[in-house]
Image (cartoon, rainbow, N blue to C red; front, side, top):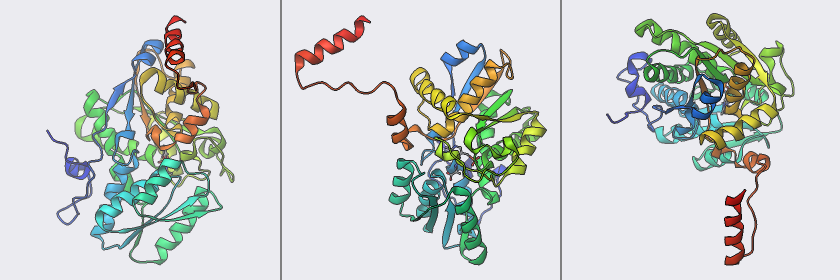
Amino acid sequence: MHWRGLIEEYKAYLPVDDDTPRLTLYEGGTPLIRLDALSRKFEAELYAKVEGHNPTGSFKDRGMVMAVAKAKEAGAHTVICASTGNTSASAAAYASRAGLKTIVVVPEGKIALGKLAQAMMYGAEIISIQGNFDEALKVVRKIAEKNDGITLVNSVNPYRLEGQKTAAFEIAEVLGTAPDYLTIPVGNAGNISAYWKGFKEYDAKNDSGLPKIYGFEAEGAAAIVNDRVIEQPETVATAIRIGNPASWSLAVEARDESGGLIESVTDEEILKAYEMLAAAEGIFAEPGSNASTAGMIRALEEGKIEKGATVVAVLTGNGLKDPETAMEQIIKKPKLLPNDEGQIIDYIEGLGEN
Ligand code: F0G
């Protein structure tokens, strides 16, 4: 049947009623793709939940459709957020569609090009600050508190987690049960909290079981792992360049209740997984997303995930959002040749020989 978008599909699980606008860009319903090469290599059942298929190319759309619909229902005229990029793109898209204004505050020079282009195209008011995400979040929280009519749509807005929990439902629906493990990137820690909430709610209604939640921060931004705020977070994975996660305690709860873990992965591990996933499985996910791929691979290598286990790695955003990292990191560059048919043919035929 035709997919009707998140609110319509999951209204039985969401805080919506007849007054809630039926906002949608047909978010959700994303594919769960079996990772054939990796499953063979590690003798396990490995899958990716490919959230880059959402309308603005990231999982944020699940939370944003709810947050913006509820802001509209409550009579807001503007939504505001801090962002490492994806939240701003998603907020701007849904707010435009709902007829609301968008204000976003972002860390200067640390937003992937595609995400910035999206927010600009969707018509957001963009303020770029000489500070990081955590500082941007502090400011927008203050503005939203002081101004009726301006709704904060970062993941501290509870409707965000409500929307995002639906990805867990979809995984359990496709597999028939929850997976044994879920691996997921951790930035501001909203998504890991949303998945755990989703698996618990789905299990309560459908007896689908619960996964162990394995969260992965970037090593240079690993606040939860180190149990302290990181004042100057740094990582190539700009999406998760966050030193003071807002949903810190909820993430710890998800880890502990599920019998899971939260560890960090290095930029090197992230980039290696990023390139491998695209080249070996045909799935191009942005660097931050591959914290979950890198973490899954390490957990398999270290025996923290056993052979035969079913694992879902959450790929939070589309690789096209960050063309600069791809171009900088990829070792195999395009071959430059003159426009000479003979030379081009010789080169291409030569490729087959080795
Ligand atoms: N992956 C991607 C691609 C993200 O954009 C984010 C967060 C995360 C993972 C981490 O999710 O914050 O719920 O733990 N991006 C936010 C943003 C912060 O502004 O776009 P989280």
